[in-house]
Length: 173
Image (cartoon, rainbow, N blue to C red; front, side, top):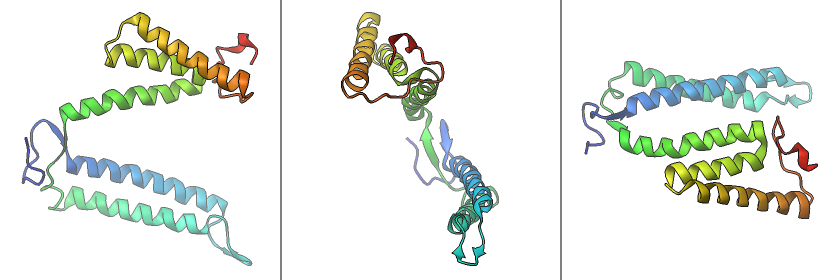
């Protein structure tokens, strides 16, 4: 077990310094996007007051300046080098085992819709992470999605997103 504020990064994990640099870069990108889009909307003071992008422009600018300061502090400063380990590899693998399938589920929802993506997600999640058998996993994934389809599409008449490819087109909903 490593100490959280040791003078050198512990072996076998991601350092806090590396994570702060990555987060600073991501936040700088988000802040730059906010600044760009706010400028597109109008980021100055008009004759009747602030334009639509006035306040978001300065919030994006503050995010960019803050993330640049964190980046510079961690790349060139001494305090960033003293940071310990952020996460060890084993807990990171456990988090990624949950996060990556969830990210693929979101992508699958965009392509094949909520019902089919949910059935696949539940079945694969049960099979791979839960170590259940294929029959039980596929049966439960199909049943949950079928019940959700009947509840929303048939009973409540609320159509949910069926994806760009709409694999359930033959059902007529």
